[in-house]
Length: 463
Ligand SMILES: *Cc1c(COP(=O)(O)O)cnc(C)c1O
Image (cartoon, rainbow, N blue to C red; front, side, top):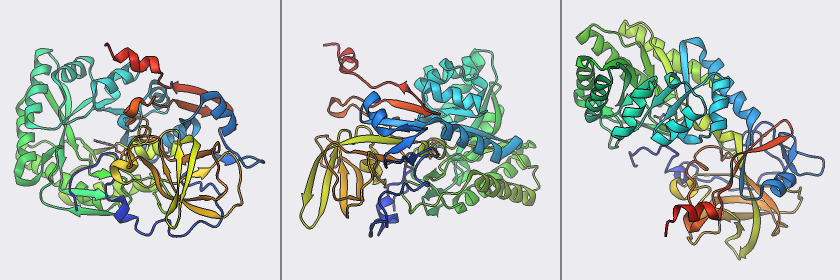
């Protein structure tokens, strides 16, 4: 079992989902509300609609492939998270899942904070008017320039990831005459994957400073001696696409233990703990994610209990959901190009996108589902693999799924739950033009990230 962290998804999904899709669903026309965004439904003719607009019109107006993002669903999920955590906690949306200026504005309007992990994400956030104090800056190798900008602009917290960085951020803050609020990211020896977690003493991965061997305690010691830094808490992020709260339980216990040690050694009680993100969503009907209020209750119960037993006041909690907010809110719409039945194996369905708009299947063996959405069909189910148009046999969008046997070139098919880590990880492989993101709400659709053009490609190529 690998112990490395895969921020955008589990690498072992194929193992964990063994037997998945062994039988076709009873009715291929059913759009399981678990995997589709909230306003998705089929109209009287059987075509999918989102935000009240049919896919035929969306395809006509915006082309395919394209991501369609259900704005009211996005906003509802933001509210569900902030309501669930209430006033004693902070919700930071992890911008790396998907970030654009429109998204930043929605986050502000819904009262969320934002995690960034690069100068580019920081610029996008600030340009859309996110107040710097509501931004957390992450990353295991922030550049000198990124640190300077973050401190100068006054981001609310920088999450320190190494001993070198402690010194770098302190130096910059001192030079600018500032006191930068920081957290220390620790590795707690927990790696969580979907339905299981592994608790270990050490972690073999690049992020954070180990609790093991007194490393994290030493980092706290150093930070506390530096005038330029104000230590506000401890940060831990244990994995992604997690359903089981047991990993958070172990992680919270170990972080609280560190808080107790810090109090005993330095006489200070750090006011905050950040438990990171990584909460799972339904990519297929097999997945059963928890609601934000259940997660909030579980996390706050764990922290309260651990703090009580350590004799500490309960710190303010922050969480950083990315996927759990944006993931379920979007689907990718493709047009079927070619269909190849391979006798005794499966049928290969080629679409007009692929690994350039969704790398997660190739990278993490991620599971997705797919539906015919331009019409209803009562044809028999056939086992398909949905593949892209790239020059790569690993260019798979959906590894195994059932689709109606009368599927034909020109049909529109859609892959749900592609809001997180699809557009944000999209590439120009084969000089593909990255698809647009179209926000749909109450009968209106508007482009929030436009489709790339061949001029865009040529403009980077300076000859
Ligand atoms: C990636 C990441 C997140 C978000 O993870 P999701 O799986 O999208 O919820 C949160 N915090 C940190 C530090 C991360 O690296």
